Structures are given as structure tokens and as C-alpha cells.
Image (cartoon, rainbow, N blue to C red; front, side, top):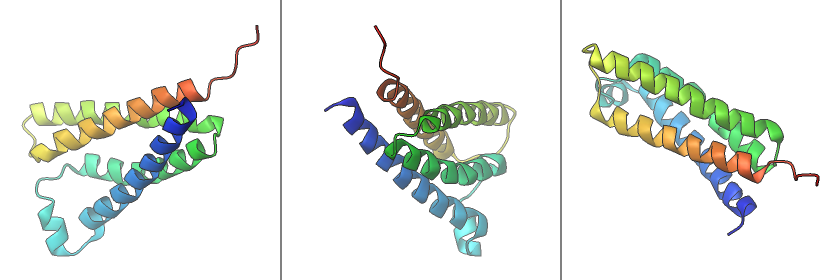
Length: 131
């Protein structure tokens, strides 16, 4: 499978991931009292970051599908900002803050996904060398 085909699948996954993130984050933030209670010990700054990032996931995915150079930077931004939020979450946890264990897994999946997308996007969209 060539780089561009892989990039298409990653872009589609980013769009789907963004839509799911918006749905689940929206339920946790704005849903019924039962939906909000089901979240448990959600960490507010992580929850809000993930919700807003969902919009950027979709934007980056569309940009990657359309092979827009700015989408590479959006992917790098998502990987970097997710790493920063994960680090802040780690500090929060080590400081004794209440959290859900599933948040660790979710942040790890998000970070790994965006690192893979950013690396693939840089590789697939680099300018051809002029020898």
C-alpha cells in the first residue's frame, strides 16, 4: 500500500475519531445528568481539551484527504498539544487528583494516533526533491 493510500485511511480515521470525540465529549459536557454521572471522575481540563480537539481532528482529516500542506501542521499541532495535556494530566494524577483509569488509555491512544498521523503526513506530503 502506498503512502497516499495510507494517508487517505488515516485521514478518514481522523474524521471518524473527531466525530466520535465530539459526540462522547458532548455527552459528558452537555448531556443528561445520567450521561454526565457516567463519566465518573473526569478531569475537566482533559475533557474540554478533547472536546475542542475533536473539531480540529475533523478539520485536519479533511485537510489531509484534500492533501493540503497546512494539514501536516495541524497533525503536528494535535500530537504536540495532546502530549502537553497528557503531561499536565500526569502531574495532576501524581498530585493526588481524582481521575478515571480509562483516561490514561484514552490519552495514550490519542497521542499515539496523532504521532502516527503527523509522521505519515510529513512523509506523504513532503515536496519532491529537485536533484
